[in-house]
Image 1: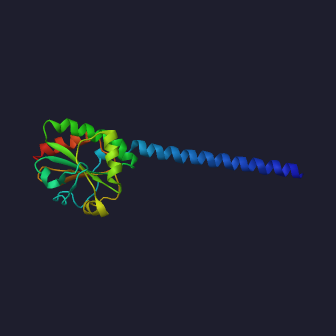
Image 2: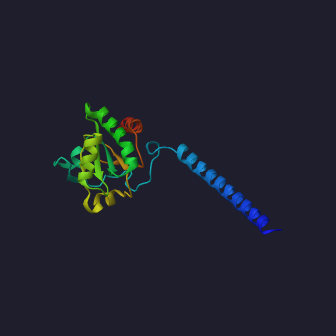
Image 3: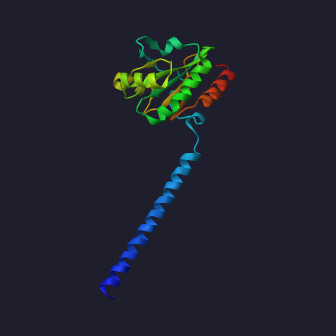
Length: 192
């Protein structure tokens, strides 16, 4: 076999190996996409939390508008405590859903959202709300103490607090307005 024949054979072998590697990678990517596309959204799935069924941790702070806010002052209505950051893409994607949820309950005043800034700055979050809308209070969490109290690892994470101040649901990942409405209906039917 001449040197040219050996070079051609090696080149074919490399192309064959590269082709199979590309096909294998494509199959793995398709399977990954299929898993992501078929898994339930956070609004349909209850996340584990030692807080479920217990009184929510204390949550107080200064809102972006300078007012003092506390979870206990919202006693008597349903509250979605939402840990978020302006740099978080899933937070950006869920934001219109939280706007829709708060608008649905604005008149009745039976439910609302309380945002907690996770690993972000007030100016960044203020700019985000100015651009994207949203009228609920958002508080800073210097040192991450509130996130630790709630067991939050990263945004977005949300907790549904009943009118008596008990944690009834936790989601890791994005929530949507319709899913929150369903949870509210179920909670109200149970007498919450």
